[in-house]
Length: 100
Figure 1 (tube, helix red, strand yellow):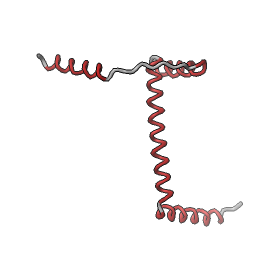
Figure 2 (spheres, one colour):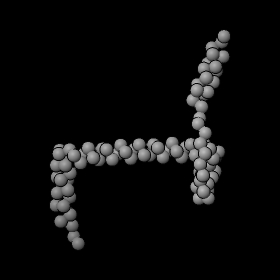
Figure 3 (cartoon, helix red, strand yellow):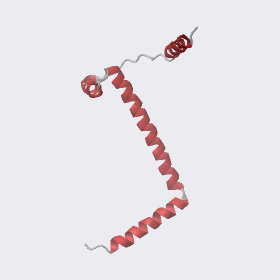
Figure 4 (tube, rainbow, N blue to C red):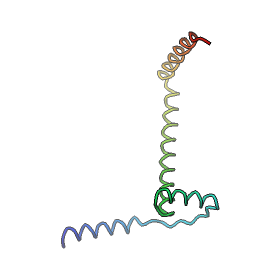
């Protein structure tokens, strides 16, 4: 068997094993309009627009969670707190000199 045939067979096997799971949902008028707007602006089908929107929302949530964890970690770090207090004091000192 040629390597091309084997490669194609492996691709087909991978596609079959990672098949999508159908999902049904009711969007309502505004949801349908929003999905249509996304699909139209991106030049993709509604199904692809929905997949992209879900993936983008999940990524945004992961980033927010990571950022919130970083903020909590820094807030609990005494060295960071000291540095923040120094910067705030410096800013207050400079702000006092500004004309009103």
